[in-house]
Image (cartoon, rainbow, N blue to C red; front, side, top):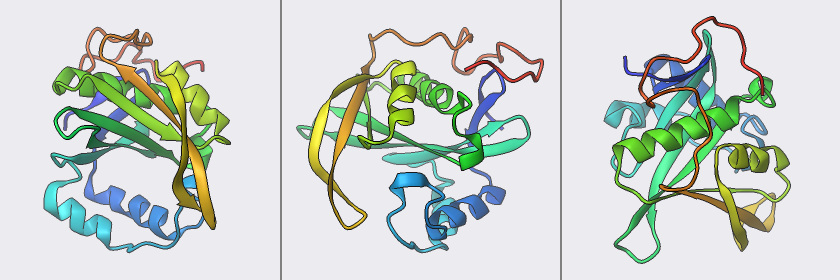
Length: 196
């Protein structure tokens, strides 16, 4: 199965066994962090997996694995400001026990490199919550720049809340991931955890 790797972090397509994690994200309050928006249809992931394996033309997901463990997932979806020029908006959801270990920024940097390598978009963006300092640092380490505040952009926890918008353009400097190519061989195959 195709894989994108960096050190001990691997991005790879969703497998049937991953659907249990998708169901957990739909029904376990707080597991996904601030993005949990209430109970969702726990069977929807199985239907989507049967449709396209979560690799669609307009939105997709890949699993984030470290060693033999599944840490979470990354996602991307298309958008456009004027209806002609497409960009990708990326996201990440890591299980609590994998946060704060340097996995998030590396997974998002790998995903960004993959999207720039295999799609012609000029812009990749990501939004996060003002209180999510860890994700803000993660995006900055992955080469993203803060563009500004999006006022009252989401309804969460009973009220409308602001968001922060980050972006990386194709020609912006990329972080060093140690790979000569996104789909190349891992830089470190020793199995030792990498430093943050």
